[in-house]
Structure formats: structure tokens, C-alpha cells
Image (cartoon, rainbow, N blue to C red; front, side, top):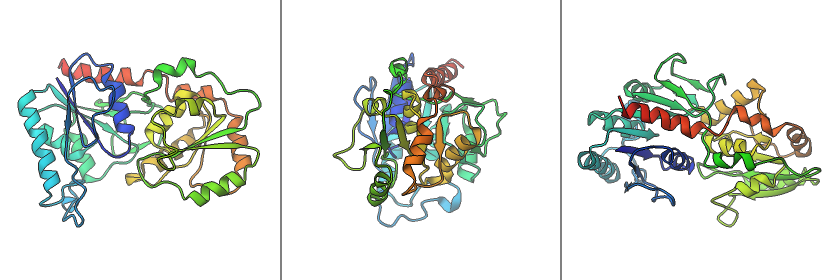
Length: 331
């Protein structure tokens, strides 16, 4: 039995959990503040949210933890629920994607913990603590891409680079290439944080009149749970630098314009800088969203070979992550 904690910010953590769980030869129980996703085969423990208090008190425990607001009913309930499930289910280990506090709670119950790590600067005390107690640390990007992560020794034997993980990995062979002479661009806007200013998007479209834009995720009307067909119909994808979005663009083998969003610990900025400095991948990685010059930018990206994304996502990342988990079950 495996417990798999899924962070509720955005949908990327959930998509990764669904994909990895499908490769595991074990019963997997999901624990999250997100509703049980369609296709989840095991049990699902719905946790209270702990971020609804109007005035959280000492939420960071004076810099020693990431989110533990004092006297929070939501925090008390979710931690008690996790503890109760551990006592009832007697799991073999806990996979945590991602939470310092849930990982520590599981370890304090005597469970081995496998945690994922996100890009960026992870040298702060809470990250050092959680990575210190973890049995394994999984990074969902290629090991030979430099500059993605600060705070963990690259030679740490517990660190496992598995490559990108996408729910579309089984569709890679069907991706193919865009039609000749196309000028279609998809703008992917994620649910993991603040989006773009709609006026900036309008300015970008106005500065590229020879391109036909499809905007996904700007509002409920434009959101789709499965953007695969939109990706396939695009000659270029404009995306933020979140792990899930990049994994899906890479699975579709489409060249991209990558624009990092502001996320804690510089997650997306580290990823965009790594893509820019590496130079092997079909991405024009910027620092911010420009409102002009888009015909030139999209033309640059369109000339890149989308098949070069295979070095980022070869379609086997989920299998490799599942293999890391299975190995630890047997220890």
C-alpha cells in the first residue's frame, strides 16, 4: 500500500500522480485537497484546505516550515486525517508531491518518504529539512540540464532524475508534425497562479496579424481538461514554464515560446533560464511576456525542430518514477 499526497495548487501535481500511479504494481491511495480525479483507481482521502484563514498567524513557523498557521482548523483537520489514514491503512511508504509538512508528518509516523523536488532555489531551511529526511528525491527533468535546481547536491545518491512526466506520454508516437505553411499558435494559461493581463494578450495578437491564436485557460469558457488536440493543431505553443505544461508541449513535439511566471523559489524562472542556456531544446525562452514583436518571435520558434523535445520528454518519465517507488517498497 502506498500513500500519494497531491498538492492542490494547479493541476500538474494531480496529472503527474495519475500518470505515475498507472505504472505502479501496488494499491495507491491519493491524499489531497483536490477532488478525486476521474480515472484514479485506488482510494482517495479528501483533505481540508489549510489556506482559507483571513489572517493566518505565524504560518511559516519563523522560517522553519512552509505553511503551518497557528490555530488553523483546516490544518488541524487535514493533519489528523492523514494520521488517521496512516494508522488505518498501514502503508509501506508515502510519496509526497509536494509538501514539507505532510512529508514530515509521514516520517514522524515511521513511514519512508519519497518526495518530488521542483526547480528553483531550494536551499531554505524547510526544503533542506524535508530533503534531508527523504528516502528518495525525484526530479522530473533530465539530469544533464544544468541550472534547474539549487539546494541539493547533484551527486546525492538519493536524487533521481526521471525526465519530464506527462499524461500524454502514450500519445507521443501519434504527435507527428504540423501542416506545411501553417501559422497557428496556442497560448496555454495554467491554473497554478495569476494569469496574463488580457490586454497584453490582445497586444500580442495585434502584433502578429499573420498568426491565428487559440487561447486556452484565460477563463472558464476557454479552459479544456485535455488540450492535446489544440497542441497538435498548433505550429507554435506559447506557454509558461511550469513542469506540467512543458511536459505536455514536449510530448506533442511542438516548438514553444516559454515565458516564466512568478512562482515561489524562482521555480519557473530557473526552468526558463536553463532552457535558454542549454540550447538543445526547441524553445525560445524569454524573461517576460512581450506585447510587441510577436511575428518575429513566433517565426523564430516555428523554425525549430519540435522533435528535439525528445531529450526533455522521451515518454518514459512516469515509468522511471514508478520504478523508483517500487524499488523503495521492496527495501
